[in-house]
Image 1 (cartoon, helix red, strand yellow):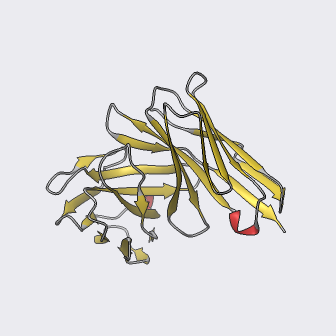
Image 2 (cartoon, chains in turn red, green; image 1 turned 180 degrees about the vertical axis):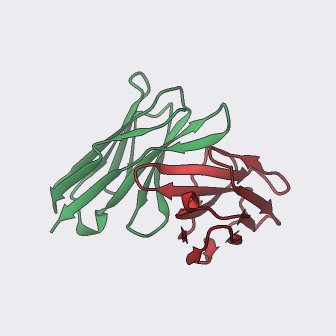
Image 3 (cartoon, chains in turn cyan, yellow; image 1 turned 180 degrees about the horizontal axis):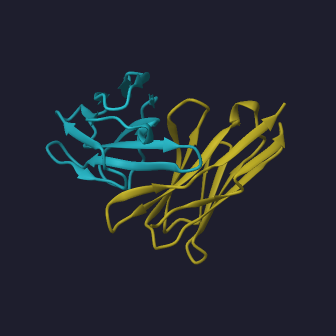
Length: 113
Length: 111
């Protein structure tokens, strides 16, 4: 099992450009999550999907959109990138809800210039 | 917002020594989770302790939970160079069904 995979690993964007971060899991998990990690801030939840067909905002959703394409895949889109979105982005999944451990992908390091 | 706060922020010890880090949180929980993050990698789940448990072991890890003090500790015994990483506690917020992570303890093991 690959677990949680993310693409790309690195990306540099210019201000105003758009891009989609891809995430897939092969553990038949119901819930999937997108976090960003900034120095000194810990992980902050951007969006999550409790189950296929549902998505909800997290702590810092502004400037992002998500799509739960199917049970395996959960993508994060930046429509118009800003320097404040320079961060490391992590996707995670679990069997469902906050009473279970989460499994994380390797991350995408995004720089917006 | 409810958040686990780890203490200390950074810790350096000699290989073979024990490392202890603490987490405090603000509201009632039904579980608390600890994760490890090696430099440049994703987080890895270490252990989950439920509110009706006081202590839990996994290999060289020992986690305690004191719900009356709203605190938890993670003890790593007989540390190894490979334990060098950041360690995070995470607590559930049932108000919004989200898991909140602290800012982490950066542990350095000196060979």
